[in-house]
Amino acid sequence: MYRAYGVMRGDVVIIRWIAVDGAATETAVVLVFGAVMVATMRHGVRAPIQWIVRCALMATIGLAVYASIAWLIGKAHAGTGSYLACLRTAGYAIAPVALGGMSADGMAVGFAVAFIASTGVLRAVHKMTWSLSALTAVVPLVVVMAAVASVVARA
Image (cartoon, rainbow, N blue to C red; front, side, top):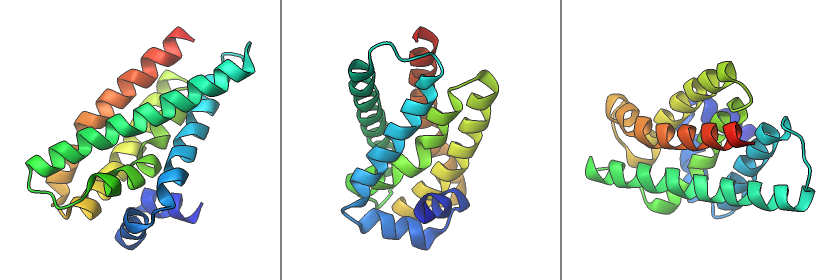
């Protein structure tokens, strides 16, 4: 929990610690998985096993897509971070988007919190300026937010 709080604060030391910690990959997936489960739970659970498998797939794919887009855009802007560093830190940054998927107001707040966290994460991982990190954070967040909104709308 301390790591998630550090990422939300934009603590560069904690973000760089997560970026090099191999165990942080699983933690990031579990964090996003939990957020997706909470966000979709409000619609009711009819088939628990199918729901758990679907949430796990959404969390894993969403995290991989976010990290891929952030890494590619970061590299295009001369970023120095690796894909694994983006993947490890991304889960901590994008969980608020999934949690915010419970309502329209929550989605806006989740996007704002995730945008601030993503900007800090990309700044620390790619060693870029704040403005370049903010521009890099927008595209993957919009993609993930659109995916979360479409899944929540269908449920």
